[in-house]
Length: 294
Image 1 (cartoon, rainbow, N blue to C red):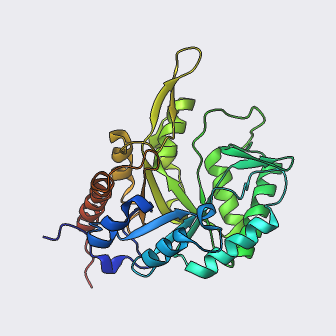
Image 2 (cartoon, rainbow, N blue to C red):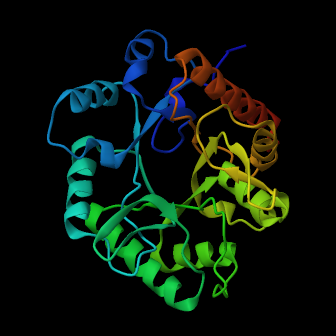
């Protein structure tokens, strides 16, 4: 039995297990990528014209499919995405031809200033119209469909009048964008807002999902001593998140899965082991799929 899913399946139609690309892992990727069949990078880290970072990314792109993950478009802001930022995104997309492009349902700009955080928008009719327009603008700028990621949230707007899943689904319906399902974000938000993550996932529009994210989270507490989970990306994926992923696999069969582990950057053996665990779950789910007679 093969240890990993075949790398030949790592195409635009069916990526397998991927990880975030880190220069620290360059030699390991060159010699033994393990089960990792694709890589994702934050688009904003590669907006310069050249240099060592682009030399590294170009070498990796020659061997593996790439996904670009944006963190700076600020789709939930009260103004349109910055035109210069969109132009830089387009140049990056044209240069590397990624198989996937994704961005967050969040805002990070206000009054001409960039805030180093992904903040949640209110879920109301005005925001729905605005976010849909911003997604349209981004997709038009980069010349392709994007995936919109569900957020990890720590507070809720009192003005919100639309359920999060209904909001995300309607943005996708209006714009034609796909969705990036971050299962760790679901678990983090569920813990922080005291709802059942399984009930949330039971209503999620899986038919629109084009990528899945898994990540680790940190535990903290608020001023009242209540538990707060932080989408930290600084440790292995939690067992509870693995369980939600396994339960979701029948609905996301064939969808690429990314392990997010950013800071501190782990040893390649640790990161590759996380990818191998995702790969094994995907393989088991694939083998369990019912076979239909011809």
